[in-house]
Figure 1 (cartoon, rainbow, N blue to C red):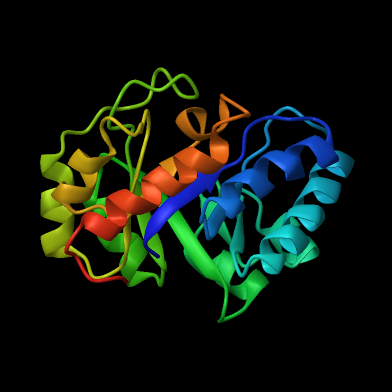
Figure 2 (cartoon, rainbow, N blue to C red):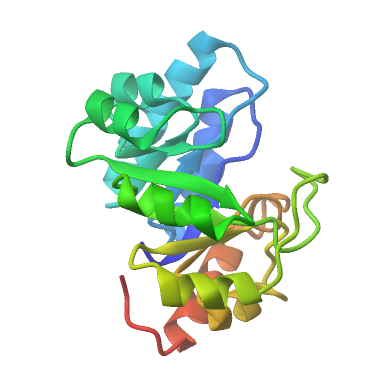
Length: 210
């Protein structure tokens, strides 16, 4: 995993959500996480299935936030697990050996080591900057990314308040990917251009792709 990791905004209409994600994909995003907290189960199932199909048409992969059962039902590439979403082993058993399983590790490098040992395919740290989505999230320093780069061999995702103005700092500190919602999707007329701009940040970084 390397580059822009687009996290979906809360949009109740499936067609409208897919149009916004299409804009990010047209800008080069190849990793998308379906994150929906405010819609019902039927809408989540409909949106996840539609996004799997859309991402496949661009050669991209869809990861479902929090819900391994939904990921399996929709045929998603994998699942992202938070603190209360169960162990990596259970998600692996549900989704199979080829699934991509990510784990939120907040500011805890020991949690990341454990997740890696359990077979996680990537780990995520943050919030590195103030976030509208999670205003009360822990705020690790960039030194955590430097330490994680030395300690881990799985890709590292930085999350939380990432913008085009600060993304270069987390990339330089060791992030393989940046997870972005607000800065990518707030302006419907700029999503494709902003996705391309994030791609250029990684193209300029000398770290080899993971």
